[in-house]
Image 1 (cartoon, one colour):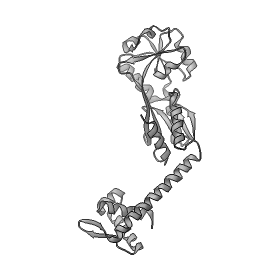
Image 2: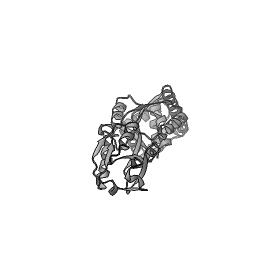
Image 3: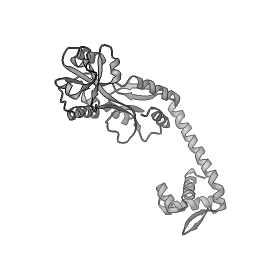
Image 4: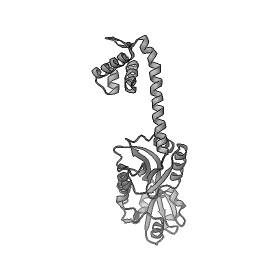
Length: 286
């Protein structure tokens, strides 16, 4: 017996209607009817009583139904076991953007270890990650949102507000929190747009909406260079999440009201059977 025909048989038995079962399976009713008759011919017994009211199992059909379900369940367990073994046979390559919160790779490794998966990380901006993911050079990636996730599965795994990162001697460092109006006249240290165009534009749009239209100074995603710019004595600030406050020699202050947010998503190609990825995504999801 073909698994395909057992799937069709179970669908008709559960729907008790050939048309509804065909719609559920994405088939035409005549084609589904033909497959059911072929299964009956193979088994040498009628499986359904056909009537204008629908399809009712015969005694033979009722005897087959639990066995068919068990067979299909066993086949699915086998498929998952093979997928898990194939996934574990090599290390997954995971793209991560510059400046990713330091606890995220650690959480990722813990979740992957529980799923029986080995990881290697590749450092790349979101735009480059998307291109590499679609070329199948990455198994999955951590994207800075918003990003073009068409054709991908994705789950948000990190979401936190941005605040103001500045030198301890900066005049605004004396504030417990910084209002948008306080930033007037400050230059913004920001990353090059090609690294993550969606996030780059979304944060600047939030600044403009709040009434702050800063001059933007591009800075490479290197902590030493960011530190050097911020402690230069010039009226410059950066927008970063709170973990940036742990950077030695710098100060972080919350931004109010309605600060822009850093949102990260785990993304992978929807046509890849990575059941382990879905388990990891569920563990990491916000």
